[in-house]
Length: 266
Image: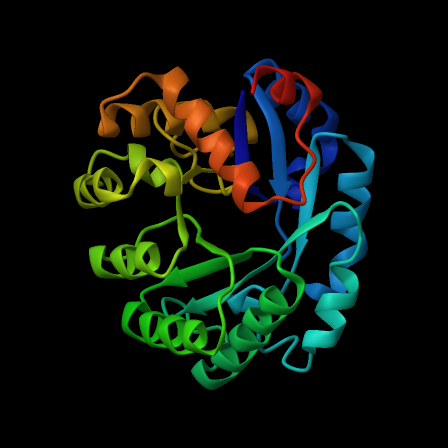
């Protein structure tokens, strides 16, 4: 089976046919999907989706684009919401300097709040990092020094040094459809360096559809294509990569209940 470790099933792109989107994912061998929070205050939306589909879990957190909308969300609030049985992670949270939707100091404060929630709950933090490598490295090293926490660098599109630091600090690295793009040689080279036991695959749907679907709406079924390209990069079969990334997902997101068929296969 495959796992889409990062998608946004609450986005309006999927509203007219969410049942069909989930069904297509299942038909493509995707046995588990993680729908990701972008706003803590929209918690009920993610919860409703995860409660509607037994193979969908969710996270709670504030995306860096929305950090200025939710600057006052507290660690205690995140921790309390994360107690829901189908909430298996914190985030996504982090730094994004590409658009600058939130001031850097606000983004950093909100990000550190989420790190605290991840440390307190023991749930993994889903980290968003875009064009912020130096500050991200500094924060991760500083916060890890205060106490370990689990995390994944999602939709990796940063430089090699951030990936190396992340692996050294115990983080996982997740690759999206960007890995399949013709001009992503650098990202594929970084993926080749990441140890097999730290790799995840994702869609970030509805964004970043992999080739040959680029330019179209992405959906969880397409994670199979990213998995196949990652397998080529690592020199293993698609089946071996699917097994590795699935095992890695359930090791990192240990609160997520493994589907019965995957548990029996393991």
